[in-house]
Image (cartoon, rainbow, N blue to C red):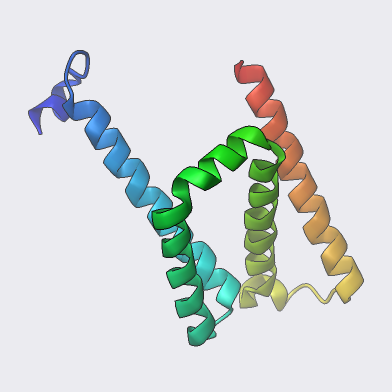
Length: 130
């Protein structure tokens, strides 16, 4: 992996291939973690979610990409689902959840506020990069 250590990425096909493989690995890991979190310890639901997500990626990946390109808000909807699940995971963590005794409406309001804040930040960050 001399090309990685020297940084000679220009004109070489190794760097883009490495980048794609690394991105695939990270997205796959992210998918597994997301499905595991959403299943909340239910192994049947975990297996169903993993099989369904693999089927979607393998057989409908191009369709999903075309839909996201056509309907930009689908990417935001997916992001909102991921943020909501992540915020709920943090709340349900014994270290955090044991110290916060919130009623359901207050918890849902906090989850909604976190989700909206992250979506606004992502939108803002995307705009300043253009």
